[in-house]
Image 1 (tube, rainbow, N blue to C red):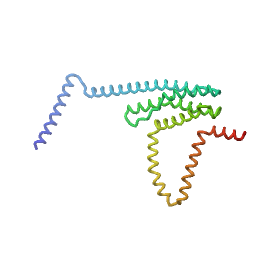
Image 2: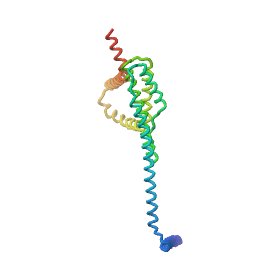
Image 3: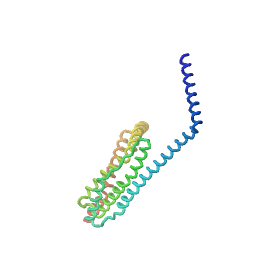
Image 4: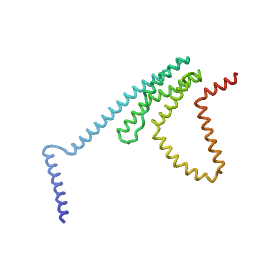
Length: 233
């Protein structure tokens, strides 16, 4: 009973305070609803101004990155192996000083802005890597066994993994996880339909095809050069 009286008294106190506040607002000419609306409008205006400022900063970064990307895109590779080798060395130095930025998993506004900036900045290492790969392939066409070409191919391989890990690791981890969950179910369902011999044949056939492709694709120009050399001799 005491708590009921206390709660009722508090409620009367709040109502009285509100009545007094409204009466003061009437005497002074203040409108509380307009006061709250003013602050909400001021907050919305501030948020729009901050969004425009953030967009302006991102556009400035994008313009600077695009200018650098255009410079990389405009590189014309030489037909002389020695000069082409020097061009690739220059790209290698630039590529070594750059890195890809990883996506942030948070959903806050700051994380979204940072992810957008990371996407913009990743354009430059993407352009460097693509140009470097084209240059290495161009050198392979001219001189498949030119001194230093295997060093460039090794760098190309390392950067491909670095790019994959930094740019796509969150998605690849999710894909691996889903695949790891799906494979046991598929194996259990299909196990009775294949004998042990069939499973070995399918497994080693897939491994063999994979190894052949992994050897042929990176070294196709060297393989073709050796085949033509053997035919000519």
